[in-house]
Length: 275
Image 1 (cartoon, rainbow, N blue to C red):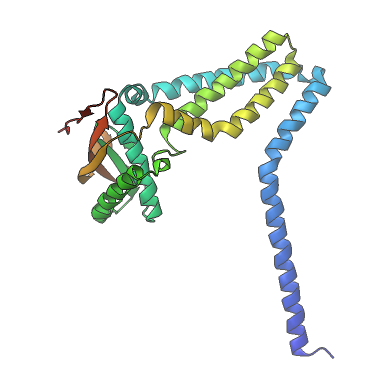
Image 2: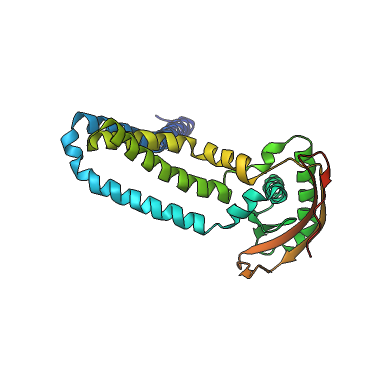
């Protein structure tokens, strides 16, 4: 006769076994999600080289994708005219980096930081979730701490993968990938099969380096941590900025910062605070 304790032990063993199988299934599914795209791309390269005749039908779809990527790259550049301004303005690049650093510290403080944008020589906006207007003092403190940390050597705070710079660079670099494939195919006189194989290989390289390319672009063009000192002048809640109304699900704080930039000639340039 099976006792109650034995029955309970049996059920506990079955329960543990089921939980173990479920955990294993979850691990396998996650592994497939990570590796399936790479395996599919590898299979496509092998198929293109092994059966070149089967790739003939891909010519027009690939050209269509190239046209779409080209249009998207142009639109992305036109939608971000601030890039041309910030690349030429060393002070604005510093403010851009401080915006990133402030968002990083706000996130560390477990505040609902949603994003931000730089819109002047000496100011930027950080966006929190709706109903966070009472966080003004915490935002001011987080910005001040982020400045101190960058000045103390934590320059990585100023570089964020989710920045608009990274998004633009991602699209432009993807366009360059397609151009590179076309040029390589023409140079080596390859068939459509070679073009497909080169496209997949260069796409995989782009996919692996996408985040690194965005961070490199920030470091070279749109973000700088080369400043002598910086201090918070004012933090205030705003509802509209440069004719862009704040979304209902966000709380915007405008941060005004006074920055001293070390010039290349040795003197200090102190930009005035805009009104």
